[in-house]
Length: 238
Image (cartoon, rainbow, N blue to C red; front, side, top):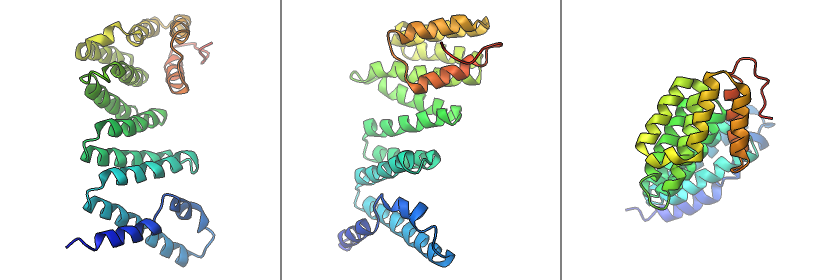
């Protein structure tokens, strides 16, 4: 009954590729409205039908990879982070359908990072906690859990100092190895400095950590946001 699927899958694949995002967003913008509407409808149809056919054949992994390709275009070429997030989330759902949890987590971590940048902290926290909880029970991945709980704690910290304290205690209880990590020790120093409104102590704690484990731009951005909540802070980590 589904013998027609391979033909339509081939047809849709030719009609729809990730590069068609350019047509949707740029190439046809100069055309008259009727033609633009026609193209948008055609593109939308081909995109949805292509993914539907993939799902009918149980090809969730291929569908997920297409969503990742589209997300990457929105990231680097079109700079539309909200749409990139949506496609990474869809890819994660498809990977979960194939029980490819590692691939799903990679997509979710992308979403978490962007949500934090966009100040959608609660969503970022939920993602980091979810990924941390799934990795801490995996012998091969459990040491990555401390990084995810660290990121979740920073998101909590920006929202509220008390929230961060409670979160750190929760993560220590969930994952005892977190207590001995450099990330957890840094968080406790930062919490103490913030409570005392001591921007110098905050900066020194960050510098000490960074001298051994280099902090990337994402971490630096969030740490600066936290530091700016200290009264009289100049807004840098130097």
